[in-house]
Length: 240
Image (cartoon, rainbow, N blue to C red):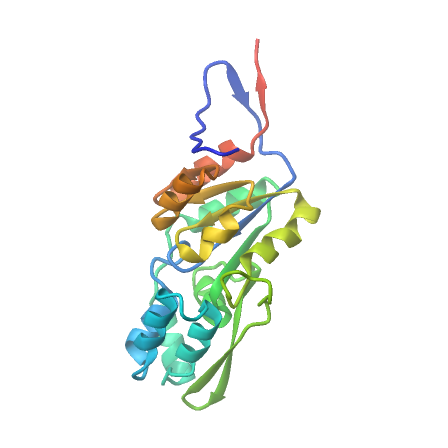
């Protein structure tokens, strides 16, 4: 598959329940969460210097792992301030229904992010989705108002020098589930999108998939993603 695909059931096709053999991997920041959570933390609690690290990353001078580690070290906040901030952040209001539909059809949903694990789990838990598996960078509190970021899912082979190599996370699922549907929005999803079986894309990821001829469908919210997911993963048979 090497082109944009929009799947629409026709009068000559009958769609059954989605087949087994798929897993769904979702980015978090800007995909499930409305905002980039780390950016909101830096804007509120970051000490001077985090913008320079951001600029160095955008210029390609450092990888995202080095950028994030340096930025998290500049956060000045208590655990209570962190929790209060996270509890006020919104997610896509349709994401819960998307997860429920995928799981009903036997498709596991994983959150795979280059963001912060504690933040992701806290936000998901606040919205009743705390049971979802999360693979992301690990946040450690080192003092009353100081923090450190660890990257247990990093890879020396990661071309983006990310804290969490999404390509390796996808490769881990292939032997288990067969096919991977990836859902994302931005530059941290570029590399892995070329390795997924199909991509649901929004924002900058749409343009990237178009330019790289990656099989994808655009969406604006998880209500649309839900319908697309069911079409993409469903066995379709000809009817008389």
